[in-house]
Image 1 (cartoon, rainbow, N blue to C red):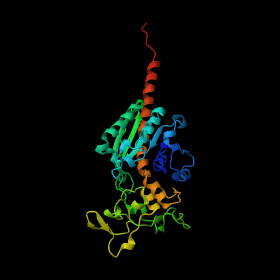
Image 2 (image 1 turned 180 degrees about the vertical axis):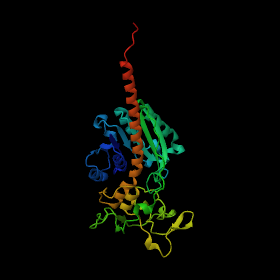
Image 3 (image 1 turned 135 degrees about the horizontal axis):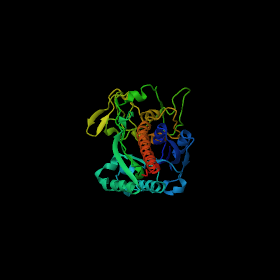
Image 4 (image 1 turned 120 degrees about the horizontal axis):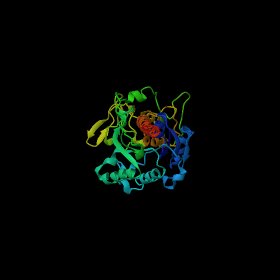
Length: 350
C-alpha cells in the first residue's frame, strides 16, 4: 500500500509506516535543513520541497493513505497556545484541503497533547468535524509512546480516519509490556564526542554515526527541574531544542534547592552532559543506519525531537493495515454475495 506524507521532517512517521509494509510514494517538507537527511534515508521517495500552501491536489499521486504531523508549536502546553489562530495551526486546514480532494482510504494526523487543552476545545472539535465532512469516520486517542516499545515518556494525540464507504471499525493498539528504559535504548553505546554547535559532525572509524553531544550552558528554565532519568527509567520527552536535551543517565539526579531551582550534585558536576544526537535518535527508536545530516549539531537535535518515534508509528501503522485488510475483506465478501444472488437460477414450476 502507498502513502503520501506531509510535514515529513526527518521521517520518523514515514519509517514506521515503511516498517509496517507501506511504501512512501510522496513526501512534503518545507524545511531545507532536513532535505538531505530525508533524501538519504528514503531514496525511493519523491520529496516535494514546497510549502503545503503551494501544493495542489494534482501534485500528489493517488495513494491509499495520508500521514502527517502538522507543526505542533502553536498547540503546545509550553508555548503560547494560540492554536488555530496561529499560522502554523492553520496548516492543519491545508492537510484537510488535500485530503478532501484526493480522498485516500485513510489518514493519520499526529499532534501534541496540548491540542486537547480546554482552551483549544472548540478548534479541535472543528478540526474533527472538518475531517468528518471530508468523508471520513474519525477516531482519536491520547497515547504514550512508552507503551509501544519506545523508551521515552512522550504523550501524543493520534487522529485516524477511514473513508466512510469502507465502514471501518478501528481500534488503537494496546500497550505492550514491559516498557523499555534508557538502559535498553543506549546502554551499549560508548562515550560520545563533545562538540560545539558550529563544529562539523565527526564519525570515528568504526564509531556510531551522530554520537556527539553539544557543549554549552544551561538556562534557568532548564535548571528549574530535574533533567536526569536513571538507567532503569524511560527518558524524558526528547524535545526539538539542543539546549533542552535530557542529561545522560550516568549522572546522579539533580539536587533540588527550592521549588524552581535545581543544581548538579556537588563534587559530581563532571558526570553531567546532554544526551548525544545518536542517543536521542535511539530513544526515538531510529535505527543506527538512519543517518542525520547537518552542519550544526543543533539541527540534528531539532530533527529528532520533532520526529514521531519510529516504533510508535509502526504499531499504529500495523493497526491501520489490519483495519484496511479487514474492511476490504468484508467489502469483497459482500460483493461476492451480491453477485452470487444475481446468478441463482429461478425455479419455474411446470
